[in-house]
Image (cartoon, rainbow, N blue to C red; front, side, top):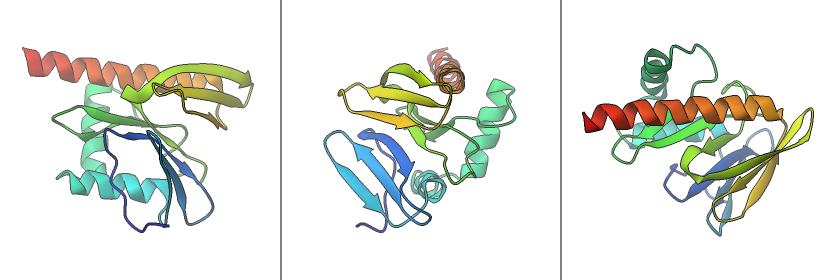
Amino acid sequence: MIHKYEFSKGTLAIVPNDEETSLVLEDKERYIVQEKPFRIMEDSCHYFGSSYEGRKEGAKAILGAEYKVPIVVEDSSNLIAFPTTSPYADDCAWISLKRVFNIYKIDNYHTKIVFDNQEEIIVPCSFRSVENQLSRASRLDLVLQNRKNS
């Protein structure tokens, strides 16, 4: 078990494991981290020189969205993560936008997320909700890329 973790390009997802720990999925590694997913996201934003609240407010301004907004964890590579539910909820997982390969409906309450390395997880979230979150995060990425290139 590790005590600190920062979201990176290798991160696929950060999933709640129990009330006090998270399961972090990377390319070929899985870690149990002694923090909740939300705390890992806060710490990751600080690690890259910002606050979670600042990142959230920036995304809200760009997207015009109020809740479940994706965040840019790190600027230079547009490292974007999106929450599966309210970021403050105990069952919220954080998914790395650029690592998602496909999503599949399991039933009305579960969605399979397949990553670009063929790893997969099932999240307790409807297909439509995951699809909306993926779309919102992609829009944030596109707007930021366009602004950087203009």
